Amino acid sequence: MSADHAEQELVANAISGDQLALERLLLIHYAELARHVAEKLPRWLQGVVSVEDILQETFIQAFCDVGNFQPLSDASFSAWLRAVAENRLRDTSKAL
Image (cartoon, rainbow, N blue to C red):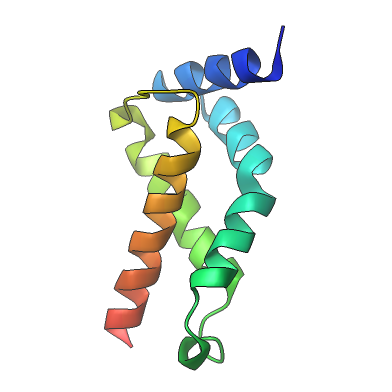
């Protein structure tokens, strides 16, 4: 089984409510997502909010919303996760 196929299976299972599958997906994408958030985190916000804070909020949101996720391609989950992170970052920036 290829890595892409295995990930798509995890995505399907996560959408169906398998929390362990979602946890595995989040671990797979953790480093990439952390780099993405670090690049987007404004300098003025870095003293107040860390990358880990944004990731925590992102993962909570992912657990709440994964059932509504609709994959359109093999890269959809990664793109969706980045969008969730950017939204959490934007909301945090507005709140401070």
